[in-house]
Length: 333
Image (cartoon, rainbow, N blue to C red; front, side, top):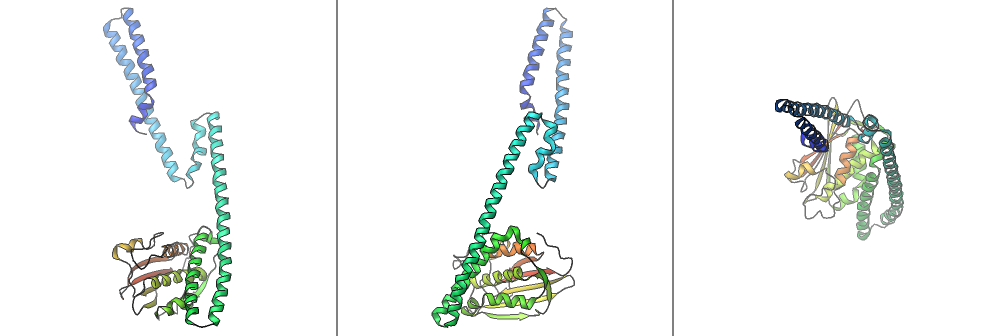
């Protein structure tokens, strides 16, 4: 609260005090009180009112500073009225505010339930869509023609988008869907490659793997999804003679997995925005990108306590680095 705001609210009181001062001055003048005493009375009265309001302003300011600090310290800031309003207002106002708070809580709870119902519906529908896709894949795989190969390529793309939608719907409740155990980095990489095998073959990707024998603590499903999204991103930015390189390094406190490609990569000014939600870059050949894949990668990495970063590949394309801690694994759920 600043001084201007405080004294604006006190204008009615100040007007009343001014009227009282005027009335008393007129009465004293009528009784022929000496001008000197009248002046002393006016100055004394004005000083008293001025000192009173200065002290009151300091008290009010300190109180609001205290309340602001209290609000800043609260995770759930909407609980603030329950902590202080009992001291600020009478019972009638408190009852009204409690009714308002109850109504707000009911509305928030209703919205939460609606959101959960919608999320559950999306998850069910996504799983239902997977069944006909699996059937299409099976039929196409049993009839190896150029036409069926193209169908497999498109169903693989659809499956990738479905996985994105599924993980996006589950982001708020991922703690219900994890299983941390030790996995070989090579097995995880191979699983991700297998999920994208048709698109990789269709685009003629060469795959190189180096020092992937290390083991890490992670959730297999989440980690394979992360790698799959990175591979999918490399496919979107493909150039001639495409190549993917997976390399791992072992350190005392962490394992570092680097995924590099020789595609068109990211522009220098895009590097800080690659993991932003909905960011698709300015590539003219990437109009169908949703901009959600790497965003979900970032969120999942945060939940798995994995540090993810991006940069320019030594081959001229993109480089994504995953730093997986070895000990003191703490999930940020």
